[in-house]
Image 1 (cartoon, rainbow, N blue to C red):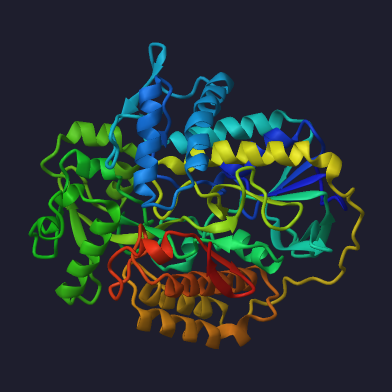
Image 2: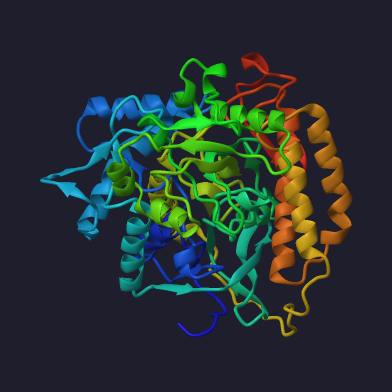
Length: 523
């Protein structure tokens, strides 16, 4: 397709796993327009490298997967949502295999390997460490073969348009810098997470909370925004990408050492390096704090492990570190925790429907109840496949009830003028404010200060003109949603930890946070 249409049947915002899987499901019911803010190869899910959790063997393994997910969720998983993930995940993986022979097989069985936090070996792997890339390639191929699906790159959606609390279309800044509007019957949000809310993150640059911010401005409820998963072991070097070093390395015997080269995890948990990820992240933060280093970090030590196995398991990580003169089989690796996965998002039911008619969400942009208070490792790819398909099917089945799209007037003036003065500085201030006040370890005073500082920035962000200033406004709104939700949850649970409330409070907070119109409530 050349150029933007005035109207279409369905719009999918985001070209990652959830968005592409939804588009495939929708293609049998009408015209589908997938809008990606970057190249589709950059609209990528960022899970633990090379893994997707699924059980294709027997009922016992399905039960173990369900139990592991519920345990990781720390009391807040929706059991029905997890049951759907586990059971339908089998069919989604089998479907992928029928589309492509790329996934690694051993005879007639897939290769399963153990991962930290798992009670059973049920991690599906492809060759090397790129199962996510393999899945995206399969989905891209399927989308390209669909005559009803059009994918447009570099189209930055700025807002969801509504009338009488029903979606009517989207507004966007096109790849030519022009403001446009496209009418549609329904919108699927699969725009990824909000990792760029923090200066240290494993997320791509495109993950600037666009989906959550647009949905909230359109009147949708968002939920569980306080639960941000911080990955404990992420490469930390200047000018190097923040790639994560998977938990499996610690499961195989990797050590964590402080700046003095002493192993320290035994002081924090009986399982030492095999402690839960949130415990490891907090321990690393404490070791960094007491080191009083100007630019603190700790080390991951793999030097005593089998070098050939490490290279085979992690070829991409090995190659990336070698580019920065670190041989992970011989040198200790400088690491810090980094924001990795936003568990909360647009509140949906089990079919991806939000509280706004015609607006759906799936993947990291959504809050479906699958992850509870803490995501189980490697479930994000499976969630994108399962709930992307479910949301697409629901949109398709409800087409007969949807409003017929009417053409919207296109705007004429360009919004892509000179770069807004100070926008990068403002984004940096948002990131530093959230890392300090809404990061891994939280306090009432710290979060109150973060909210105060964010509110003081509001005048700078009221009239965004460029793509980057829209991203800044989205990050700003997401920061307030996270900080206010975290301040309201006066307990520690899952990925949310407060030193002033270090324990659970099941009586008050065995509930989900919900935000609408800036008010936080628990349901």
